[in-house]
Amino acid sequence: MSTENEGTAVPPAPSAPPVPVESPAASPQAAAPGSGAPTTPLPAVPPGAPATPEQELVHAGQPPAYASTGSQGQTPAGAGHTPAAGPAPESGWPPPPPPTPSYADGGGAGSGWGSTYQQPAPKPGKGRGGMLAAILVAALVAGGLGGGLGYTLAKNNDESGSSTTVSASDSGGSLKRDPGTVAGVAAKALPSTVTIQAESTSGEGGTGTGFVFDTEGHIVTNNHVVAGAVDGGKLSATFPSGKKYDAEVVGHAQGYDVAVIKLKNAPSDLKPLTLGDSDKVAVGDSTIAIGAPFGLSNTVTTGIISAKNRPVASSDGSGSNASYMSALQTDASINPGNSGGPLLDAKGNVIGINSAIQSTSNGGLGGTSQSGSIGLGFAIPINQAKYVAQQLIETGKPVYAKIGASVSLDESVSGAKITEQGASGSEAVEPGGPADKAGLKPGDVITKLDDRVIDSGPTLIGEIWTHKPGDKVTITYERGGKEHTIELTLASREGDG
Image 1 (cartoon, rainbow, N blue to C red):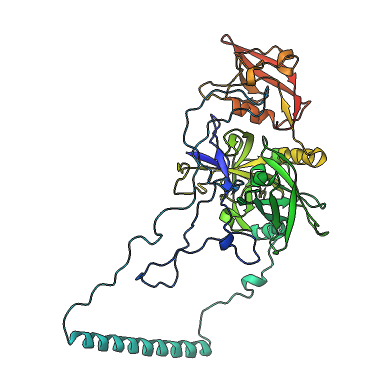
Image 2: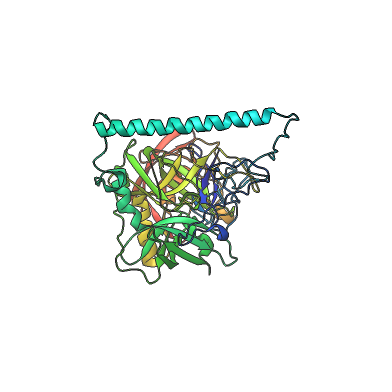
């Protein structure tokens, strides 16, 4: 199984499913007029194929696998690898990526119709054809008479007042929907969401989602949605009304997978979505996801919170950078293109940012299938995302909490083991850092952070990053077969570099 970042590969945390997703790359020729969201062309009908009233839409092309469309415009894929030990991003950044599950790729080879259809040759013989034609005409005429008689009888019965048919007093279009219904929440939230088109300097790009954060024109989304446009690329945001605005990246946090962009010439009537409290979310709570799955903008899906504090590790597809989160898990349908979109509660408050999905697809680079939702989606809790977004708006750089120790990313250890050596030959335990002051040493295995069970390095990193620098935490660790508990104050690190 693989978890994908809508646009890149997703690495699995030991106890938790692998992660992140990206959306399908935009197809210029398939763009619908005025929509800004790519659509998929219908496959050509092979000669001789039988005519049908409708034909099934077949997704063409090879879009990336992130919840937003691939920022690099390439199909993210990763072959399954044996997890290798590596230091966490404490002593050196970026850290080696966690084991990355294979990603699903879009598109498929061959005809969408299968084998060519051939009209069977007529059988030799005379006379029978005319009789069959006569019978057929007679049947059609009889059918016409029956239909006419049926209509006449129904009309007469209706006029006589004996009909038991009941008609609705209000049609769907005139119904008043309460604010707490899914339709009511969607109607209020949709005008504050955007479909993001990101294009790199090489012309490659993809599609993702974002939502209005404030009245100044700041839009919150995933880092992997806009990563390709960071250095000189192009960004645009399109509202459901069809209004499209150019945008620029204000700041991005690769480790958190959060980014903030700002609309150029932003309108004065922006309505920010209300932010909820993700700490108060409970398993079983209703959820509503808004995004542009496979480029289909303004799509609304529903589900529930199926788990909390799910350790998720994801890669940006480059093989060198990783993101970690303690995610909200939902079964609301999330697909490539949903990345960066809001996950709402039943009242329409934002409780998370849709970022990754678990997928059963094992297509590798150049594969012939793109993965989609299997009911396991992951969102960055809004309490964490809000803090990160505010830092990006104020300084343009993210700030990470840290304990000052490098931990192994190996899944074979039941906990987060402090490595013998840090990144680039540095010390595994930073001299004078929180871990050093608390007495932690290389070889110690951290098993709990406060009341959270830690079963791996990625899980520990994700949990630490839900805190802010200066927070005090309790760490439980094992050394020489004995369990110890210490308290330490988290330090800070600025930037992803």
